[in-house]
Image (tube, rainbow, N blue to C red):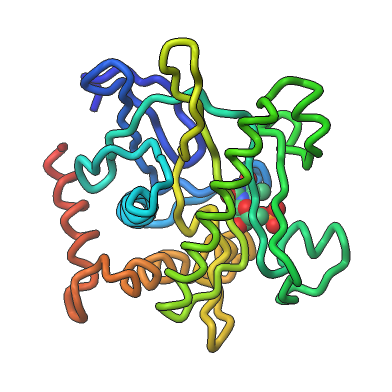
Length: 260
Ligand code: TMP
């Protein structure tokens, strides 16, 4: 890894220069943060699971025509992606009231929303990623109106697809966060889905028990984070069958011991 030039290190991922111009390698760490990094920890094996889960979802989205930055998974913790210019907006899609929506507006957690809500947050750690309106995006030029139309259309398509995908494995997609990026084709910029989709940025509740299978286990000190992420991967069919559940993680441990 040290051979490669590091482009950026975020809270959960590192970006390295890719093998060809216009590509990057996205490395998934086990580090977990919450509340704008005021709470820090690690979730063992999280990076391996998120790499695999995100690969699965991005690949499926590509088959329904949603353009994404994902090219291919390279190994347990890395994937090859297209380099994009990240739009500095976190797009949150909500189907059920939870988290900051419940807190801000006093809506009881778990209330089914009569319609899907899309919210935008300005991606700026120093400001704590504040909630913003379309007007701010237009006023400060963070994205054009055409780009915002594309982003909202894609967010709804991703939501429809993921609601069905998770419902089929007994999971309620409460809310989730997306990030988008621009790729340039001469003077023309196109918006594609970027970042990752994993239990780090989704609220996933078991449909029968309402058990939380996502990063809220870490945020709220509920314990069992690694098991929850594994359960999501297992239900998606991404882990070996019973008795071999840890095979993926064990392999990663071996790799690290061998210094690869
Ligand atoms: P919120 O209810 O805290 O606003 O979070 C909404 C969704 O967005 C939830 O699924 C978690 C995800 N999220 C992130 O991925 N990154 C963040 O920094 C925050 C605040 C939320």
